[in-house]
Length: 423
Image (cartoon, rainbow, N blue to C red; front, top):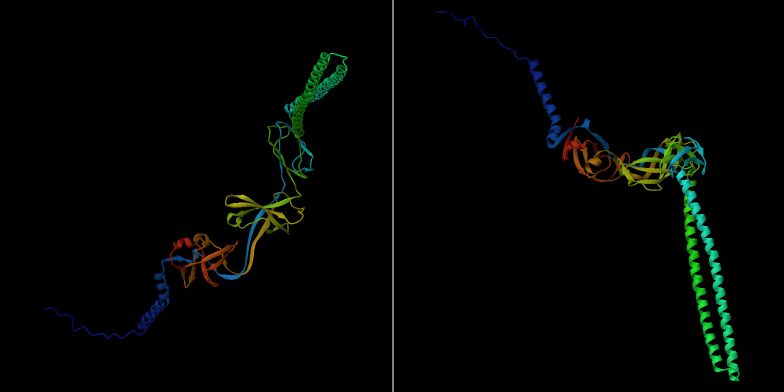
């Protein structure tokens, strides 16, 4: 029989560890405190439709104060008058100036040699001279013809007068029995023939005179038409001397010296430095508020000048509209073509306006809503916006002063009514 070890076993009394119990109790209290502190956030998280990190968002606070709508951009100096000169006829061009030369109005800048145009002018001038001779000859012939017709009429009048006198004598003699009745009848017939000849001579004088006048007028009109043709050709020949239309400076030369060009080819440009303006590009969203005559400021070279909007392009190019500002007063002398300047145009200025910093939320929502942030939750709130400036948006309804809103990055919200903002 094998003996066990029960006789050797004995009870060991374990004393309680108070330090460990205290640690466990403290840890339990800490867990309960953390849960109690985090419970509202956890509840908010579960009550939201989505959660987005705050690092991906931009926020702004609604405030009240002055509201200035303006357009600030970089502009460049351009000439209000900058004509480009073209070749009025084809031919070989000789340049009389170089780029940058100062020129006066009417000064010859280039000449064009066109033998065809010169010869045509000479031919048409010869035709005009021939027509002038024909016109003068027609006047002389008409005078001669009128003289002949007048002579015939005068003779007819004399013949009629003589026939009347003969009839009167024969009638008186017949009454006294001195002549026969046949002599009276013959005298009467002669008078009638003379009167008929007189009437025809008078009619021929009038009709032939009108015909001669018409013939002279036709030759005169033909000559005048030819003179106008010669004058036009003379103008074209004169335009072969390309002259400056303004006082200014030669800008760009588009051709080389002694080049042969076609009609209407670009030759050179002239810049009128006495009438400079500043051209700027305006975003399309602001262009509809821009108007002719609006005040502006032009800055550069440490100087600020006053100006006003003088022109607005009706065309939108790459989302921008070109506008020009004219200097209010004399044009500054120190400016140069294409020089860069800062431009600011004042559209509107008001005080005590509820505004918020401008952000992409206006474009994303169409200005119909914004996400108002309270206690870590962004709530979709209907709003109504007004005018916009470069950095601010006017708030008309839906927000109040001090409200904090999300101004960018709301595309990730998926239009959810409530979004939790995590840190």
